[in-house]
Length: 361
Image (cartoon, rainbow, N blue to C red):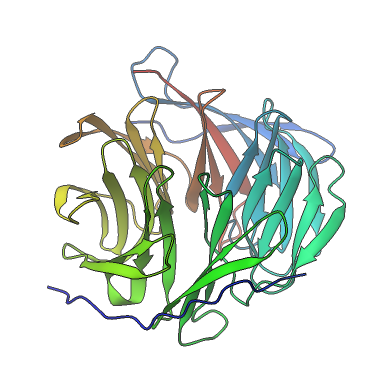
């Protein structure tokens, strides 16, 4: 049983900032990359995910982090956290368009369709805003050190960013709200915690929900005031990190790492609705609203698929073989694809991006 933790809160206004098969590969070589086809679920087999292909990244070392999609421009962006680069892929073919080097520690990527710009959240260096077509730097934002996970609020057009924490190193963390078009900081929410992870932001409601990992609680933040309204203890396991949300049904999907668990929580009360075993070393849990599925991508080499029958009923439907280190993902709704980044980590394995066709329900 974990106790709720009280957090110090600081608000700063108006600051400015300038059942699957083990993969067997057949590789086709290219100039910039290698596109690989791997055996997976056969089309029409009834599985939720069918392996469709992969792209290799020769020379990449360490971990990837998070994706972003430019649906109109047909591009997929991936933060190459530990190789300090930005990966740009063709959204249709999966082939590499460009690998951009020279970053510090890129964690997240945010695409702005209105201006066709790309904000790369860098934990070490100033975070650049790029022309999404040419990838030329247009301006930079001096975000606080340790800038990492993000959450977008479409109701305000603002971006929330986790900063600080043990990787800086820093004994506390701050969640800042910025205008991504200008870099202006709107407010900052202070956590007396050195490990704050992912968040889920309501698009039509007043709250965001954020994992305070080292305290083993989920914090509920009022977006307008920046006040921490509640903290809910995560009782079933430790190290709650990834999170996603079904806002329509007020359900939160929280993944823990010790041990690996997927918890379905009531977003109004924090009560646990359902719990499932999940892969270890999970960095992303993805909600597929169109098909009412949850994809839990883990570094153990498989993705757990859970289906929602109604707000209170969930079923495990598949354990899809991926690759070791395949732990961040994004749903491409327009193409009905799930993209997964397979990080080599400390191994000598080839870095890859995998993609799977999503079967409709």
